[in-house]
Length: 219
Image (cartoon, rainbow, N blue to C red; front, side, top):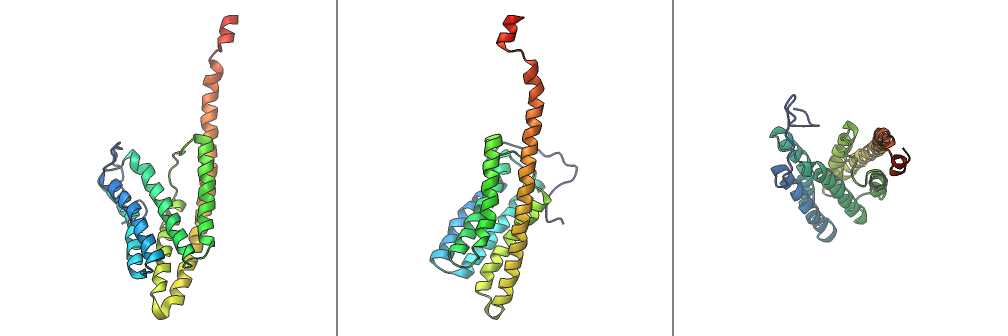
């Protein structure tokens, strides 16, 4: 079974609905709700085993909601923007929590935050919103690595004699994931600009062929 795009039915004609309360979207909402639970357990209670379990469940919902949406034809317009938003916010808040509690290195937040801010500004300036670009394979692998590496940092806290080994593995995975995050972000940045140029060029001929009121009076 494929891991990326799990549940995809090749050759199936999917129906995209406008409904909010689909099972995948409910799972995505649960992902949002688990974020403050993780923050509390980590930053305030310092209860790392329960926090690790919550984090694993939280990140697992990203795979589960996508699988259900594709496997059972529950793709929705809401899910198309809600799911990636949940990914970005949950990763950023979880990473910031780990950095502020000294569990993760400071560069983790900056490596995630800077590209996201640049992309958000670029999308707003060009499209006043999302450019609606498909997620690339690099982007999916990046997200998967981040969602594996971050829980590893939590496991390292309770790994006993293997703490150093687990920490090194987690840090290596984080570094690779952050590099892929920058690669995916740069690719997304230029694809957004290319889409904007294509839309501008497509609109130019129709605008030029429409006579202005002044031209109409003169003719």
